[in-house]
Length: 141
Image (cartoon, rainbow, N blue to C red; front, side, top):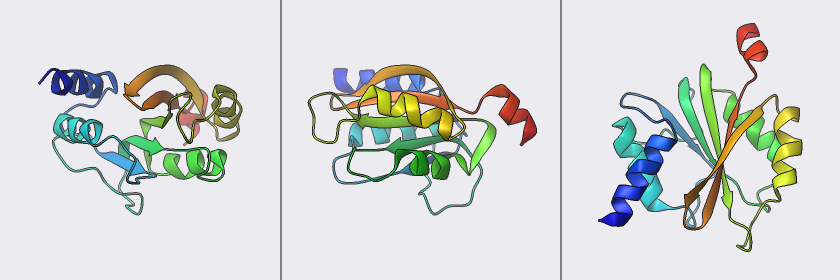
């Protein structure tokens, strides 16, 4: 039960609220299922997959260093975002297979038109980085 409470608290730290539409990118068999369930519980519905054309409040992007170009993945994940939308980039923690260097995220985010706002420990194996479109870019959309 303690694990459930911490995952629920984590979904709250992601800023997920009932009624929000959450899109998931980069799903594979290594993702944290407890975190996925907590996010679904928090928004009250299943996660929308990456093929959806719905406008979303939050995009969760699971990304490993072998997944290709991070900039392309961030641009893809941002295409369906609402004006106030947020991308949570989830990558394996340091020392885990697929780990991204923090400098990779720092360099890729501005090129993809995003600003990094915070980082958290998202799950036992995953780190989370919150990315948003800068306010000036949001007003031009």
